[in-house]
Image (cartoon, rainbow, N blue to C red; front, side, top):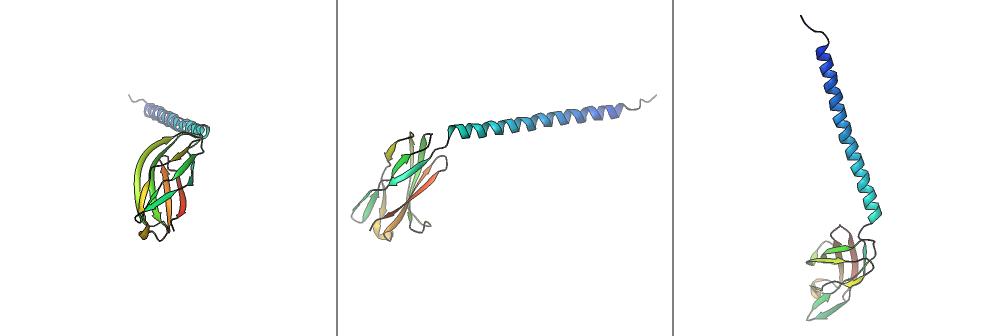
Length: 142
């Protein structure tokens, strides 16, 4: 004796279970994304400005000390300082740092050296934060 309709009932039950599991997964991802957007918007992002880049030249070597102001609502972790050629395609010098700065502070970063005769007189000082914020400052060494 065969029972008709039993395989259809199992198929519908399995289909409903799969749809429910996928629905919960999608709902979880949407809620998680909404939380991350709200969290990012409420906490703000690291933001800074290069105010100046004083330098002194000794024996054709310029020591540049970028001055940054942390203007965002969050602390900034500065990770890289570059000195680039004027066209920004050639890295003349680079240094890695790990400095966490509080909002509202003005800070003189460590000096970075560059050979003045290789610069053509104008360089770009680039400061990069751990959160990916990049700021440039054009500096005339002549």
